[in-house]
Amino acid sequence: MLRNASFGEIMVTLPALLLAFTIHELCHGLSAYWLGDDTAKRDGRLSLNPIRHIDPFGMLCILIAGFGWAKPVMVNPGNFRNPKVDMALVAIAGPISNFIMAFIGLLILYPISHMANAPFYLLIGMWTFSYLNVLLGVFNLLPIPPLDGSKVIAGMLPDSIYYRLPPVGMFGMVLLLILVFTNATREIIIPIVETIFDTFLIAVGNIYGFFG
Image (cartoon, rainbow, N blue to C red; front, side):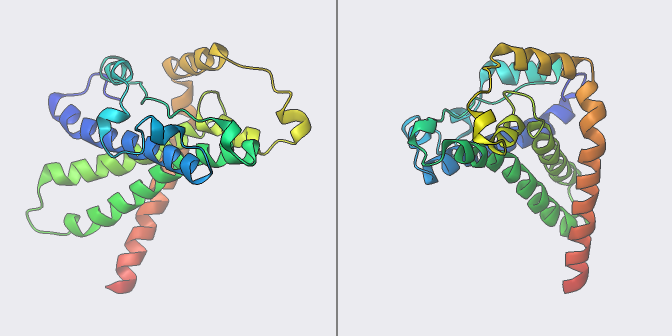
């Protein structure tokens, strides 16, 4: 993501990533709390402070390798009424927050882009923020552990299968890293990301066109 990026690109992208990661993890924690698990609250994760959510090594990997992660929100499924379904709801809350942030970013960007002498870095920053959020949302919905998509898919399975799923452990992470560093994930998700992003752009244009 930031591999071979210029200093200016890093200065624009890092704040966008920090905010996207923070809201994403906060929404995991809030959804778990609303569903009966206060683990995230006790861990101090129901916060808009990026320091609470950032994994230093994950951020370093973003700078060096272009791929990284935030600190996962801990959840205790034993506190849920329906652990299978509730875990899926907690998981999907993060990607949904990314899509919402992307759309809001474009809503803000649209009028700014039509202003005379609009600050260049503000335009690039909002565009980057929106695009990164769509990218993070789609990426996290891949059905590969430990990504959110694997938990969402698991929540749709019959109980007879769900409760017999073998532990994946590090295998899922190794598979994910292989896919990332061979650019396989890029080939899979970029067309989806661009389709969603373009759809958001059209929707935003229609909204302003309707009220304009």
